[in-house]
Image (cartoon, rainbow, N blue to C red; front, side, top):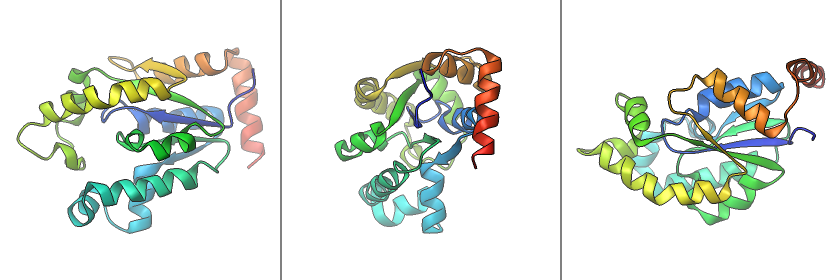
Length: 188
């Protein structure tokens, strides 16, 4: 089975999309794309500022435009924001020429990983745990429906999750993966 043209990572805050995505792209010799970071670079402002000025809907419009744009980039791993799946218009662009991997994290793991992060506007309130719970209940069925692969990330190192994803999307030997990675670098 050939490698997919794109791998798209979806999942909640704190699931490890950026960390795992960066390592997965490196392993494959693919480009790593982080839609949230690219929105910040394009706007010259961080996500909390965009939320403050434009509201969540303004941010989601920027996110949809970015996802559409990034769907054209081949040989890439895309880490999406947790809410990217909430707009139905994003779904075809997330799935386009891609294997969608849902990085699933328990509520406890999400709380642990996001507890001190001030760059998550939806959690800047008196009940971040309640927000994470509500978001999970709302988004989990959508992540699951979109996903070609569901990967649990609780108490796993990013390196282990990357290996498990690689084995699920393209079960090859480590030697074959090294050859593909080397060929990918030579094509840049």
